[in-house]
Image (cartoon, rainbow, N blue to C red):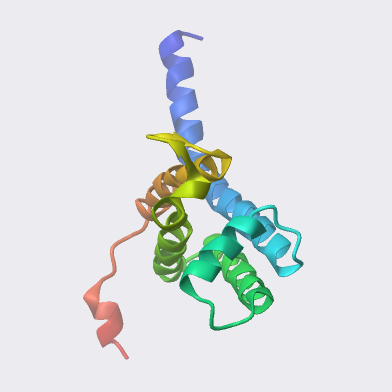
Length: 152
């Protein structure tokens, strides 16, 4: 087997499995992290509580945390259900924006110096990789045809 042949086999393997693997990874990450929040076991609770107190002090934190955890679980489940990608994308966008807010609203928690993130800041910044993976999943969608909506 030549290096070129091996390269071609690897590329075909990645093309075949990248999208399903990304979907499963989204499910694992969002469902797992979400269920931890639902059962008040999340190590992110102090960061979420600090942001909550800054932005939404109108409901009990425990209620918010459970709802936020269920929201994350829903994102995870929607990623593995075929044809619901267009539903989950706006939810993921809302999630990425809200989870990125501590970088701006809580700099004392997320930055230890100029461009030096704390562990919490790194946890948030890694969401760029999730955004890139979501873009990869969405890049495999087929365009919506207008006539599908006009049939009914």
